[in-house]
Amino acid sequence: MKYTAIKGIQAGKEYFTIMVKLKELEILFPKLEEDVLPERRAQRKLNQKRIPAIKRYIVENLDTYVFSALAGSVDGKIDFTSFSDEYPEVGILEISDKATFLINDGQHRKTAIIDALKECPALVDETIPVVLFKDMGLKRSQQMFTDLNKHAVKTSNSLSELYDSTDKIAAVTRNLLEQNEFIGKYTDKEKDNLSMNSAALFTFNTFYKANKRIIGNSKNDEIKEVLIIEFWRMVVENIEQWTMLENGELPKSRLRSEYLVCQSVVIEALGQLGNHFYVNGLDETILMGLKRIDWHRSSKLWKKRCVKEKEKMVKNSVAVYLTANAIKSSLGLQLNDEEEKQENKFKRR
Image (cartoon, rainbow, N blue to C red; front, side, top):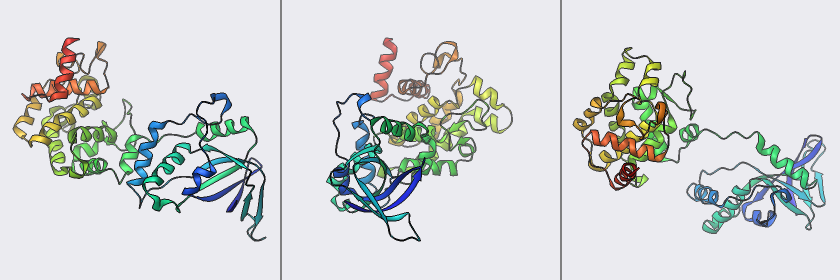
């Protein structure tokens, strides 16, 4: 096997970067036995649940998909010949046909690409960079896996959604922040968790998840963006604590400690409420009823729905439904089937 390669040095050892056609990945990195004990392999066990999402990303974004390099080890004879003395790091890497390859980083990407090729054969001649290290045994390969992943930091959901130009709900959420002055002013676009002293009250991810609840089972290509943005305008205008904050009548510290209207579970619950209007049309008269709701954290309305003992918050999907149910009942709205199901379970408890 011959590849055009760039030679580099790390920790005093040579490594090589090559371009591999997608159709060659399955041959270069064959599927390994999954039943090998962890201490006898140099990779985590393949998580099959991750593959469909990565594959879908490829096939739905054929003109824009992008992947970082895979990293692997090669056990076998390799020879590098540079093209010239002027550029000694660029040349031909010749690898023995008897050599074996082990993927150290990127096995989920590799598997998803192989699956995507079955659906989109036009991708076969596209390429992905592969960084190859000389194999130095199992212990070294295990250490490489640890080193490659030890300092990896997952991008926050908020930042990922903010940057995602292919996600229509993310696009709606970006437009919401641009068009709604209050929400834009108090929403952090990078973090998923806020400190008590943060200048922001909400995160981008919270409104993203709330907008997903508004849309519900509707198809994403039919998103009623104008309705969603108008819904949030009405919500902002009818939550008096937010108006008091803007008028300097309620300090941010008291808003956080005494009221629920900046809690993520409540924002998502408002999104669940929004699904009613998404299906049935907006009614500002009904939403004016938000002014009459007791948003105090200590209110009995929220007990065991989103507030547990000692006024600690509950943050899960069930809490979102139960909180939305309390809001909808306060506004005189009928619960849908799933909301009714969750409410019945709650009452039985």
